[in-house]
Image 1 (spheres, rainbow, N blue to C red):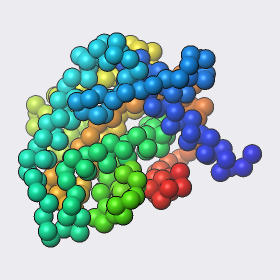
Image 2: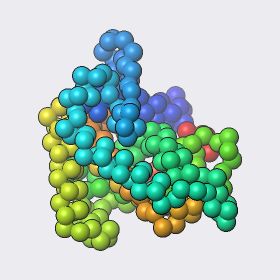
Image 3: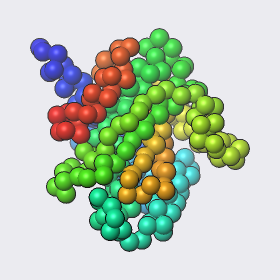
Length: 258
C-alpha cells in the first residue's frame, strides 16, 4: 500500500473518529466498529458547534456546554451588531458576519483530524501522556479576502501560524483580565474533567485565533476541546515535523486535495 493511500486512510479514520457526540463521545467510526448502526449527529441549534447523538446526550451535557454555547452566541451577536451592512470598500464587501462564522464552523469540521493529529504530536502525547493538561494548540487563521462564491466554505481560510503554548503564556499574550483567565481555566478544566469522566484518556485543547480583512477591528477566538480515546493513536502519524505536516495538510485541504 502506498504512503499516500495510508495517509488518506488515516485522515478518513480521524475525521470519522472526531465527528463525535460531545457527551458520550460516540463517533461515526463507531458505527461499523461496534455494529450499532449509523450514528447520526445533530448540532446544537443555538451555537451550531456542539454535536449530539441524541436529545438525552444533549440534555446530559447542557451543564458543561452552557457556558461555551453562551460564548459562541455572544460572539456572533457582537460581530453582527458592529457590522450590520456590507461596506463598499472591501474586496469581499458582500460578506456578512454570520456568513463568516458559518464558514469557520465548516472549516473546523473539515480540519478536525489535522488539528487533532497536530495537537497529539505538539504535546508529544506518545511520550508524555499528561502534557495536554497545561497546554493549548494555538492556530492563527485568516479568512481569505477574495474567494470564489462557489468555493466550499471550509476552503476560504489559510493558516498563518501554529504553535504549542502553555495556558499561562496564551493568557499573557492575549492580555486577558484576571476574570477572563479564571473563566478560561475553569472552562478548560471542566471540559477535561468531563471527558475523563466519560472514559477519555485526555483532552487536546485548541485555540483558534481568527482574523478577517473584512472585519479588521474584530478578533475572534474559538476554543475546541477534543477528547482522545483509547485506540486513537492508531490513526496518528507520530512525527517531530508536525508543524510542516500540519501546514501542508491544511494547504491541500483548502485546495480540495485532502
